Length: 458
Image 1 (cartoon, rainbow, N blue to C red):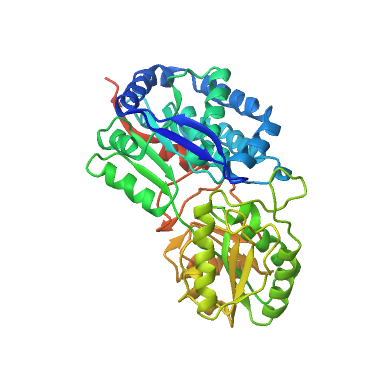
Image 2: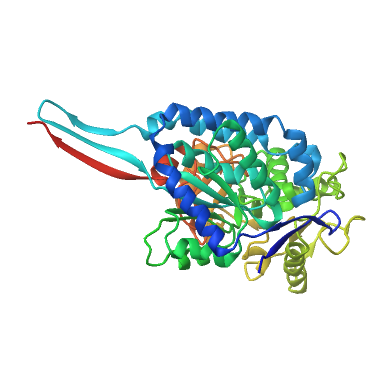
């Protein structure tokens, strides 16, 4: 029986579009087509693959107005922010720029007697399971370097952003990438797991929940298929006594509230030196009260609905539990808050790490703020977490920031910024955030396998 997948718009709860999921047999056939097409794709000159990926980037760039409107309908981001092409283009461009150097053979010796080298060989077929919160940018993180490296790609996009996968496929095919080299598919969980368990694909990249990542690893158990994961986060910000208070408030609160808090590396907990704590909270409350919650199609809206009612339900539950345990809420309910997907952003104080809102991923517009006495207390609190994606340190002392960063269990350390992905730096995490190496030159190492050549001449 064909399974229908509905995309429910957070704007009004209506069905925005419906698609049929592939049967298991259809999924296997897609994987077989990808595997058959891969050798010829890998045999094309590297520059040709790069040029086709860049052409697809440009096609996506010609559709930014549609991108912004459709993202508002699919996952609630306000149209005023204009979609995701800026970050999308930056990532594709950088990965294209470093491809030749990253994929060049590592030559150990090239003499009259021997040639010894290590080549980077594509895995084969890469399965990309992409999330809805930054649906263009997170997907392209792997799609671009995977294709450039000579892999074929099967994209399974999130149910909440099915249309994004379709537009990516349209762009790549229009650019000249063969249809079997890049395929966008709609799959249920069972078919996805079967593709992995039966080794119909060769590499998995998954961005999503901890539970989803565990399911991917269970499916791959015993297959030796590499599984790269970027899972939950509970990213901290630490404001030292020597920080620029105004900049810290503005950037950290934007990091906590942008995209309705639905950012992989969004700020979910803030620790402020006690000398700045009261002023920071006062300014943070004023910052949030200046936001406008409303319909994302309205150009004046700065904060749209959460992508799904069930996501908002979890954030409300964390807030209510914290309040019952003594936390203090600072933001009055906003007029657009409907008890569903439209959720008032919230700042909580008098919070502790006994509360879920300071332990579990919220992935919504809420942040807890705690005072700290010194660096040692801040480091202990930042590390008191099962996740490790990014951490943001606010200080005028870069040496201190680096020293503190060395002691934080995280994948990326920021100083005086947050909630940003630099394509030249490795995007990675630790603990329950998962493992893997996205973007940077290291992405090409992850998306290929080493193959050694020891050639004796004569």
